[in-house]
Amino acid sequence: MRKTFLLLIYLAILQPVSAITLSLVNPSQYPLESNRGFMITVMVYNPELTVFDDLTVGLDLSYPFQAISGESYERRIGDLAATSSAYTSFRLKTYEDVPEGEYPLRVYHCSGECAAKNYKDIYLQFSGTSDLRLVNYSFSTQTIIPEEDFTITLSIKNFGTGKLRDLSVQINNSLQGLIPFLFKDKANNYYLGDLNPDSTMSIAFKVAVNDELEPGVYSIPVIVNTPTQSLHVGHLVFKLSAKADLTIPLVETEPVIPTLGKPVTIMATLENVGPGDAKSVVAVLEKGSKIVGANYIGKVESADDDVALFEIVQDAEKDYVVRVTYTDDLGEHEITKNFTSNYEVVTDFSWIQNLLVLSGLVVIAFVVYKKKLKK
Image (tube, rainbow, N blue to C red; front, side):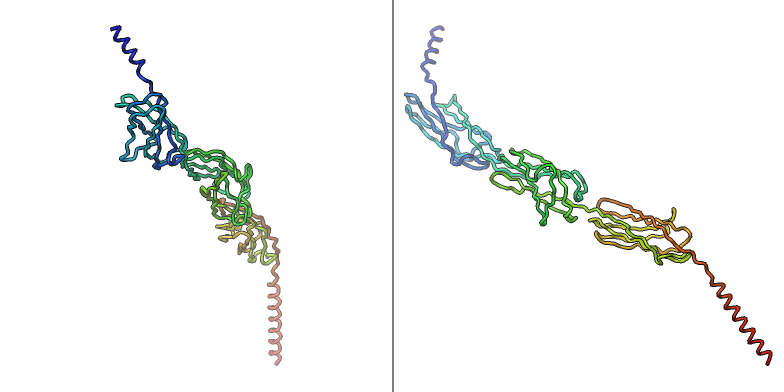
């Protein structure tokens, strides 16, 4: 038993230790790309002073490398002479959408029946292509009107396989010959750094809209800049609302001085000095708690005016209120204006005049009658 054990140790000492080295000759294309076939060559080197018998070289494929149908990934080299090299090539392909980075290709060699394999991981670089898109944007307010501050938040995602380096996000600030946004806290082209594959980056801009921009719906390009390129990644669309500013600059009467108890027309001038249209405009005339007149105007456009007319009979109450309601993009509004009708009281002496005329007719009739009696 002791002799058998010593014999096994002796044979183990005599068994040569593999010193074979494996390396790759550059692939047919490099860096590697997703979903592409390529050829790679393995160089096998025997640094020993003795022959390496019955050498086999192979690839043990795993993600992101895959086999091509019909290809073999184990090659028998045969005997490799001392201090000599051998080369063998393999065709394989890569998976789709492999993120940029380094990945190990496992190469092995063995001898004879390959009961034991010697592995080596050789790292290969994959290059990726970036695919940036504007995936979301939001506004801090539902109603955007000129000169009022609000925040725009943008989210940019890299759907590609490559990292995008040194990027900055830009909101295009030119529209119809105007600068649409006034940026308050940062420039419209803001540096963010690197964006990895399948990653999202968000940025917020505090802005106000230029008051020279007309109300309407606008689409503003969003651009990503790098040291070597500019990429259009989407649009942000917003509606610019407008605020109407309806005023009652003048209330007058026809006639200018009403007469108590007589018909009079009260005329209220409505003027819209705001940038937006006033809609559903209704004017009413109130006396105390009662409505004595109503006028539906409809729409008063920006920088336009209209007149509300009220036909009434002047009574002893001289104080009135003109109340106007209207809507615009911001909601419902109401304005009022107090008005005093400075009427005059005219005494009616027409009955005296009629009495005098009647008396004169009676006298004339009496004189005529007397003359007829004398005849």
